[in-house]
Image (cartoon, rainbow, N blue to C red; front, side):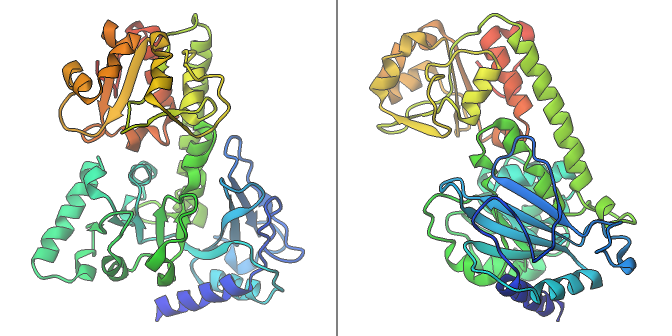
Amino acid sequence: MMNRKIYIFGALLALLVLTACQGGKTTAGEAEEGDTLKMKYAKLLTIVKHGEKGTASLNNDAEDAEYQYADVNVANPWKAGTLLHRYILIPNGKEGDETVARLALQRTSGMGCTTDTVRTPVERSAVFIAPHCQLMYELGCQQAIRGVCDLDYINIPDVKKRAASAGNAAAGKASAGKASAGNSIVDCGSSMAPDIERIIALKPEAILLSPFENSGGYGKLDKLHIPIIEAADYMESSPLGRAEWMKFYGMLFKKDGNAPKTALAASCEPKADSLFAKIEKEYLKLKAEAAGYPKGLSILTERKTGNVWYVPGGQSTIGILLKDANARYIFEDDEHSGSLAMSPEQILAKGKQVDVWAFKYFGGAPLSQAQLLQEYDGYKALAAFSRGNIYQVDTSTVPYFELTSFHPELLLREFIILAHGERFGKLRFYKK
């Protein structure tokens, strides 16, 4: 009955709430302004809180609620001036139900993007992305992870343990729904082709996944009437911009354990704010230190894939990290914020300028120079190859993506060491 009520309220709001999807201003209804959270680095995220405690619009019987609802707009990173998705976050409970009903009565406008109502805190979620699982552990809301995709690529021991628990329960002829009870995590298959039946049995209140350009939607997932949180943080143009998205994710979940008195204290939002503040402080400190060093070595961060050699654009997050590490980069003057699809010949033409080659791979055993040459003989044209300045990180055993996606300060420190020498510390991810 409760799930039915939530669905009805969500459908009402999705159909009737005023939606401004042209980008820029974010209003949830006529004459209903709110307080916009200042985002220092994130360019794709706008969060407006409405009806904060102490304002005239907040009901006297809702003193424990810090805001009646939040309006979250995600800008479309592939089409400037438009929105990718809009979320209305409304706290669970009686006051939240009243907010849904009130918003549904307001006049509507044309909807230019998908709008989802999310009742918070979300207590059951399917998380398709490993870095977001890791972040939820750091925020203390890991119990809300009830399903994952691409389990083989997740380097979080507790996730694998909880998934194994669900697998054992299923093997004991428990249903998928029973297997997902308690502390276990259901393996929902591949993120590119998730197991819809398992997701339905899981009964998640939200699904977190990565959006892609021209994806054409999410197929059967779109028909489940479950809010899809499009985690476009990876499309931010700065390392700290991506990390700042944790403020949004913190609003979705509550801390595990007994809930404190107020709704805000119960949520992961304060933890996300404090964690980001620490990350920002450490990042800026490292950046300032690196700026005081002489210009460092030139670093190349990727290796050839088939007939293409993808490298970071000069204004990509990796490009900015290399710049902030005061390292050289053969494409540092490039103005693209994404990856560059280069031919091997284009890279090797600058091979003598590459002092350090530091790449990622998914393997299980270290790669030797002989194996690399067997893969592509042209690698020997890199100055870093002949000098033995080759560093690798095996993402099948090292939680590189899990930790660095929302902790750019860790990767910045890594690049500083690679560019300026190990006298500045020991590498955490890369191995020579």
